[in-house]
Amino acid sequence: MSILESTTNLATTKSPWLAGLVSALLFLIVCVSWGTTWLGIKIAVETVPPLTASGLRFLIAFPLFLGFALLRGDSILFPRRGLGFFTFVTLCYFGLPYYLLNYGELHVSSGLTALLFSCMPVFILIFSALFLRERIYLSQVLGIAIGFGSLFMILRSQGMNLESSGFGGVLAILAAALMHALCYVVTKQRGTEISVITYNTLPIGVAGLMLFLMGLAIERPDFLAISARSWGALAYLGLCASVGGFIVYFFLLKRMSPVVLSFVFIIFPVFAVIIGAWYEGQPISYDLAVFSALLLAGFAITKVPLERFLLKGE
Image 1 (spheres, helix red, strand yellow):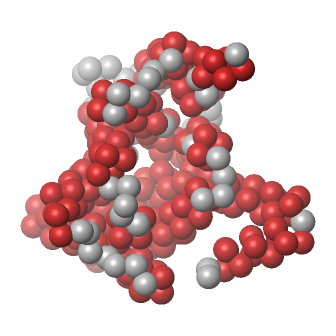
Image 2: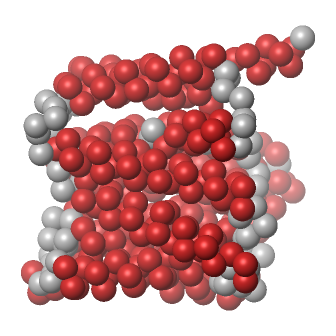
């Protein structure tokens, strides 16, 4: 039994109120952890090229995931007939998307990156309708329209157009969110019996090694030129954001409503925007604050379709 499980079980035994407080604190930890990830990436790529930075992050995280798998007795190997799925997860969840995120943050602020990536649950909704034949409600369509309309206004207020160098970074981040969403939906089809430890451990190790070797060959990084700040950011991303945030999130997934927990994706961009603005010394403009609030509100609507509750009430 993990420390988290022991703490929560003790809290539940003593008081339901205390158990709720522990869950709320863990929820906040996930929001802060994932909200600071984007600033960590921004600092890492200041002196580390994006391919190399992605690989180093995963190589730092892999031993801890491996140790966690050994402690729990979980296999790190996918089922024998799952080689194609393993390759898909390694490339489309870990490999290419995280390189794109690192590349995108060379041109886009950490706060805007988080806002762009918050589109990912909406892409999941769309892919679920296409591949899993799940129903999309009218209120969800309205939420998608509000969200993407606000995103367009945010990009315009930030001065990004088809000719700007930052637009390539925007497309890279959206592509990463799109691939993550597709991976979640395919996993729902083919990977429901695979434990979360198995799902993450070996793909992280293989993707990390692949990205690092590609970085050595293509980017030829000068390791002596990497700043202590970037090394610290990589360590934080590997140890805290990847491992710590992952463990707490999936721990909560077993104890909270998936709908409630999914609001992590709405809340962490708020932390990212505030922290990123503070670090980069850029005040949050009125337009950015308003359109960001509309974007997150629109995406929040997609998570709570009103028609579903109206139908249940009848």
